[in-house]
Amino acid sequence: MAARTERQPEGRPNWSPGRWLEAGPDRDVLDVAFVVPLDGPAGMFGPSCEACGLLAQEEINAGGGLLGRQLRLRVVDGGAPPDVVASEVAGLVADGAIHAVTGWHISAVRQRIAPLIAGRVPYVYSPLYEGGETTPGVFLAGETPRRQVLPALRWMATELGVRSWCIVGDDYVWPRVSAAAARRYAPSCGAVIADEVFVKLGTQDFTAVLRRVARSEADGVLMFLVGSDAVQFNRAFAAAGLDTSCVRFSPLMEENMLLATGAANAVGLYASAGYFESLPTADSLDFSRRYVDRFGVHAPTLNSLGESCYEGIMLLARLAERAGALAPAPMIASAEALAYSGPRGDVRMHGNHLLQSIYLARADGLEFDVLAALTSV
Image (cartoon, rainbow, N blue to C red):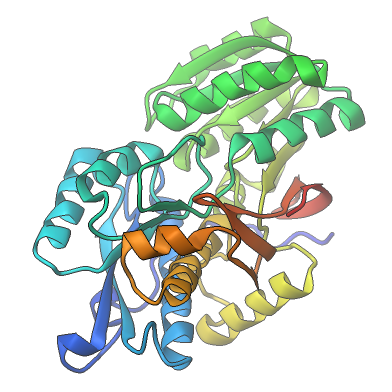
């Protein structure tokens, strides 16, 4: 696969979120808090998330809106401290300013938001996450370790002979709980976890971590690092020469992070996700076409995390239309077995989770080469 010219992820889209929708009286509008990171380690995802969110909003409104009303996304910075984000969202709910919540933000933010708004407005959490969320009215659109990490470990053992792993993750709930799941899965994959290292979110110096990786003599590094943390780790990993003897696998390695990592630092780097920009399916290619038609070739990088925001908004709309209301109770009652097709192909609800096919890909220059389907709906 030919590599693109190396470049850094683009800046924020050239629109103001406050002007995403010019609507009539408030009674004609359904306002949704769109919680996405605008700064911090995950800030590099923000422009892609905003672009995909805007595309979803425009497509829903072009089709007649949601429950006969226009959908309007209100951006909330999900990159702020979790308690700050949760307080802002809870305040919007208390004021009656929003009718639902969605977006990409880390699990530490979700855990603060969910109990504050439970049962009051529906909450569609779009990212991959550690699993186990059962708060009433919270619907999960992303991948979970059982369907994303477990089959990837099996594939890596069978196809590459990777049977020992060193885990490197940020120190918060998603990496910690996902690492615990990987420890449970490893024996069934004929693998072992040789070491685990967790670092503060926002870490830039990985010198000590790389010494631990080298001492572990692991075949692979299982990365649970977010955004710029993963980028810095990848650069340091390659600079230390560890990429010649040790592969890397991440369930959170997307196109923006790959661009920032650089092709020379991405040798032996693998990822799994429900969507890649290069996914060669009719549904994915159609989504890419619509995205480029709307935003042009210089749009924010189309990636799995941005697409998850599109997926989350579309899931919110599908659930509301099926229930006939944008309210937690009827949406919970009607969610089971909801099925539809989108950029990720055929998906369906099971409980409060969206089941989807998962793919494994290898970094090829500055793109992902999709190698295998790991799980299907």
